Image (cartoon, rainbow, N blue to C red; front, side, top):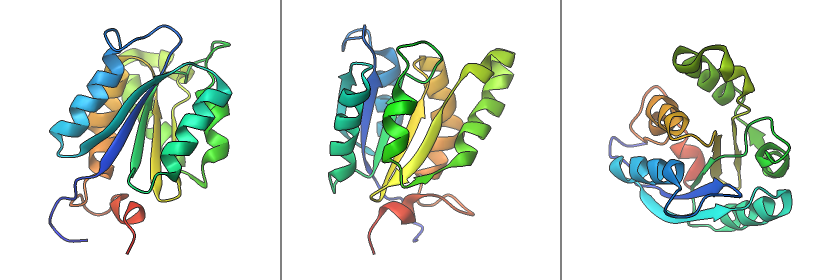
Length: 168
C-alpha cells in the first residue's frame, strides 16, 4: 500500500424498529465520521430488526462491487428483537474476533461492566468489511474513533484492512 490515503465507499445501516431519518442519531454519527475521515457515503438505510430483511439488505451490499465496507448500528444487544448477530454472522466468510474483544475493552472504560451485554462483531465477505456496533451514538463514536477509522485508513501502520478490500 502506498502512503496515499484511499477513500472507500461505505454504507451505513441502522437496525431499528422505531428510528426514522430524523431520529437516527447513531447512523448520522457513523455517516459524519466516515465522511470526515475522507471516505464516501455510498448509502444510508434504516432496516427493521428482522433477520430476513437484514440479511437481504446486507447481502445486496456485500454483492455490490463498489461497496467496500458496511457500518451497522443496532440490534447487537440481548432483547428478543436484537437480531443483527443472527442475521449477519452467517454471511461472513471470515470473522474478525479481535474487534468485539477490543470494543468491549474500550467500552468498559466508559460504561463499566454493562459492556458485557454488547454483542458487537465484525467480519469480511466478498472483499467487503462489515462492522456491527451497538445502537447508541456514544458506542458508535467509540467504535469509530478507537478502532474502525484506523483499520479503514490505508496509511495506518503496521497494518489495516484496506488491502483486503481493494482488488489487485
